[in-house]
Amino acid sequence: MAYLTDFIAISVYVALGLIIMGFGCFLVDLVVPCSFRDEIKKQNQAVGWIMAGSFISVGIIVKNVIISYDRAAAGSFLDGVLGSAVYSMIGVVFLIVSYLFLLLMNRRYNLNEEIGKGNAAAGIMVFGIFVGLSMIVSGAVS
Image (cartoon, rainbow, N blue to C red):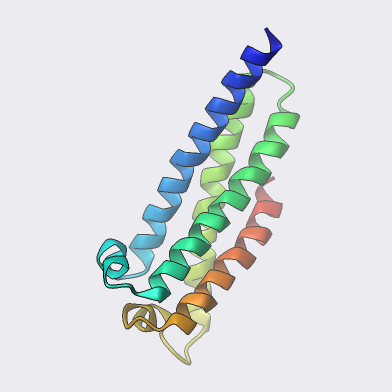
């Protein structure tokens, strides 16, 4: 019977992670002013790097939150799931806000404009920014 309970818990947390990942990628698509779908079809490598970075970043945040709030939830399974959902969403929002803050601080060149042009170097840079920020944010929310 413990296997069934574990299977249900795993299923719920995977579904939660997928939902939050979709939310995070939606937010990234909002802050980078180009159509990711269209740019991927045009083989824009910069957008590919950004999408990869956003998936990895959201995954890092959700993983760390699930680990900390599942174990910390002394109350119930539902408390662990709700805590994980709330703090994962907060983490993703902080990831995006932190990225926007870094864009404001960097006045030398417009990363979003360069990404729209297909500048792979800009995409790789944003990939690194997202992954680095996710490590900071996941430590703060977990």
